[in-house]
Image (cartoon, rainbow, N blue to C red; front, side):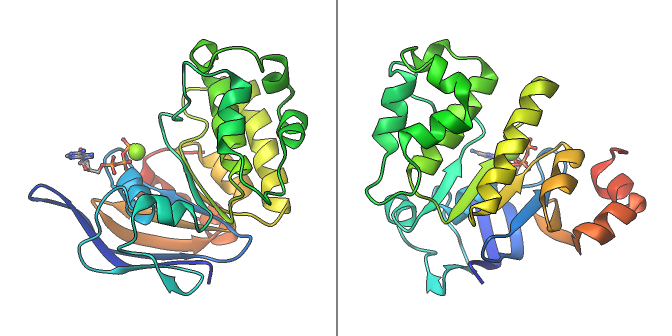
Length: 232
Ligand SMILES: Nc1ncnc2c1ncn2[C@@H]1O[C@H](COP(=O)(O)OP(=O)(O)OP(=O)(O)O)[C@@H](O)[C@H]1O
Ligand SMILES: [Mg+2]
């Protein structure tokens, strides 16, 4: 198993936000973590990368216990989080943002990222603060790739984006998956989830309440209505 999250717990103050959350992501696999607003999805992602402290439970990456490691050391093991706010440096240009993330030995070069997202090439001298939401998301994904990820963690990458931009990003997520990178995806757009992922987990009030492969999830409208209250 590439990533194994084993009964992790997390708190904000006295509020017990994650309760024995367990799931796994295999090598090269796309896995979705679903759930309503406030279910604990972002907290789960932050717990994996060491931004939120795990109190009880274990996170293992490639059989190594990374639970108590500082964030930069987890990043150094090629676990990359693209946060919900995209984390683009606004005062740097697109190209500076990308170069800053470059890692020696990464199989993704600046040119690869520009080939993947031609818009970024067109806007390479623009400041990060002058990009549209979609362009910021592309930049954020591009930056993560320059970091040479083995596991790419995405928090709602299509949120608030126009359908045509969503399509562009989804197409590139296919390319990323095909290159062998595993993806842990938090996403509200179920069509995107069902197109990309091989398995799905649903979080509700900080607990995993459902797990299925993509076939079973697609066939199960009841579960989508019950836990996600959105029809597809
Ligand atoms: N920094 C914080 N301090 C205190 N409580 C927080 C903090 N961040 C999140 N919470 C609370 O923890 C719970 C889980 O939040 P989280 O952001 O993980 O949910 P989510 O599933 O990502 O939701 P969304 O779909 O809105 O992004 C919610 O009740 C939220 O209000
Ligand atoms: Mg969230």
